[in-house]
Structure formats: C-alpha cells, structure tokens
Length: 133
Image 1 (spheres, one colour):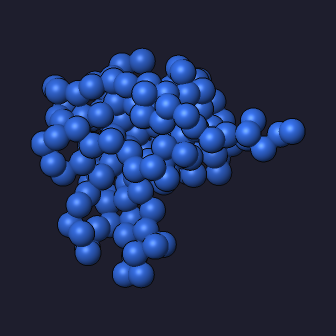
Image 2: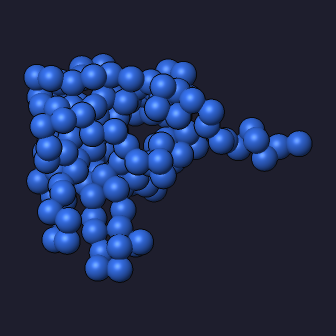
C-alpha cells in the first residue's frame, strides 16, 4: 500500500465536499484488497442528522458497488492536524474490516501523516459476533 498515493486521493476527494454549514471539508480514500480506491467526501444537510461523513461515503460507495475486502483508508481535512474518524465511522469500519489489520491513515498533509490500526481507534469494537449466541 502506498500511503502517499492514498492521501493524495483523499485530498482529491475533499474537493467535492459539500459543507455549506460548517465549512469543514473532509475527503477519504478507501483501499480494497484488490487495489481499487473508492473516494468519499462529507456531505452536509441543513437538518444536520442526515449529514454523512467522508469515511462512510467511501464505504457505502464501495459496498454498493460490490466491494467488501478493505485494507486501508486515508482521511484528509481542512485543518493542519490529524483528523480521526468519528465514532459512527469507526463503527462502520468495524462492520467491514478486520480491526487488527485495517490501517487508518490520518493526514496532516501529504508529507506528514500517522498510520494506526482500527483496533487502536476502537479497542472494544461491537461487531456481528456480539449478536450471535
């Protein structure tokens, strides 16, 4: 996996962000096991709760096109700081990814980033296994 390429794709996705209320633009680039990249951006709504984060947009786009094996996601925002996914996005990642091996790339810029596992971001994830008796 080329982290820099994935970060570049996340910044490209951020250009399509629809954020007229917060002015906070976020892009994400999701990498599949077979090398495909699905981009996502945040899409706001005046009612707020229908707003969708960039990470979930990328996941829902990928799943809706038949992709189910994921290895990494890069997240890029407007601020020059590491932008971690919200709790809802972390839960969506846990639904579709192995928490131990899935990598989350938090980009301050194209040159400065951190790579963490989903397990580090969501140490006691709730999953489908918890629903089985």
